[in-house]
Image (cartoon, rainbow over all chains, first blue to last red; front, side, top):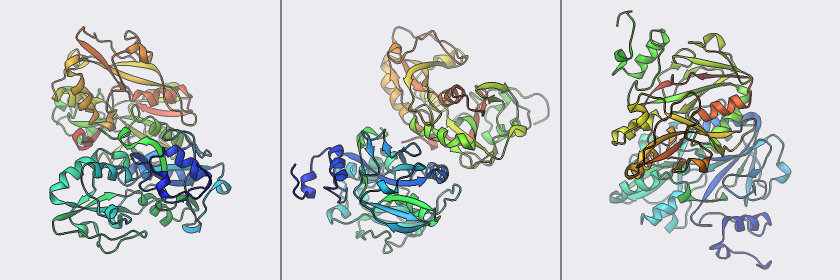
Length: 270
Length: 270
């Protein structure tokens, strides 16, 4: 590949390791959705060691929104289980740095922010089961309309752990009533990427107004023959960490996830 | 129930909460296998807070042998998720206390050993999927012969985490060749209690000699029309913690597991 500008089209068919190399060289810094199709992507949270145990407990106690994919050794930015020696400092396209719960910077590389006491958490992303839904012929409106999946803050409290507590964030996808059972079955196969829905059918029952999307996500229509299905969302742990005003945290920037070398089907439950 | 001696037979049909109450009153201190049928049981590991993060990482990186069921808040012996306010200090029949990797005591109650910096880990136990196998008409020889399931130390290294490293311990059950597929399917439904086999058919390939059982477990015959199936075992994290000579650890005594209020079918994957 020459040094001319790379477009999303150029990435089609590339292995995640090759896309990570392009990102590391800052030749591609765009969003990750639709790339390396079939491979699992993951949300990133980086915290100091002294907050890491509580955060790990929080994730374990709230597995639907916070399925843990990999945790690095304290001080190490190197991913060893779900990718071939990927470096969390350079291999994501964009990052957000938070200090005391406030956004402090949006760097393209976090090498200068890395410290000996940081721990990297990779948390499952629903892109994985969306691929499986599309394969099962369940259309996804936000994909068809090129939008960001609708996200909502619920009134369902997560189980707290140490300093971390707060409500569950969910994603919503409208599904035709006759495809509802299949949608439950298909997503149940992916517990490491949020798994089965946490709620079906009545937004008000979980404190959701379908007009009030959060985190800059998009509304989509729910048609008369459709039912809204809600899944736990990987934004939950980030939202909770921000709300707890943890002194230092780095995350990926929304939409710019970490690309693993693991096929979603490799980590499916059955 | 009067104060006369309680036998195993008296426990038939009791809810786990009632058996835990009998244990707490020291009216029953026998093994837990076969009790509160249908309810999940769990291995116990208690460690100091400063070893807890590494241990949690170890379990997360080795989910087949070390599926985490619940972790208590540091300092708290109270189980809040999988049982109704059970107390880890009194609600198991027997315990082992280890100091620097050596067995130091075998108390019936650990109230006097509890400290403000201890963390309790409950780790899934294969009793859960054995019940499902029996329901699926897959006979289990060790149960038929009233033996302890055969355990082996393999040459398969676990993924290390901090001070914790070592080989995977497995349990082995002989299954008729024509029931092998069904055995894989049935146990795959229980990822929180070791899930699908980690190896099928060739003991030598994982460094196992079927005569060399460990941890005081029993040998059983593997007949000509049977195949040995191996599952990750909840003894692994204990064995690894002992081998790492962690300065302080409490575990349940083999066979005397913690009884949860959760039906195995409630936590089945599908």
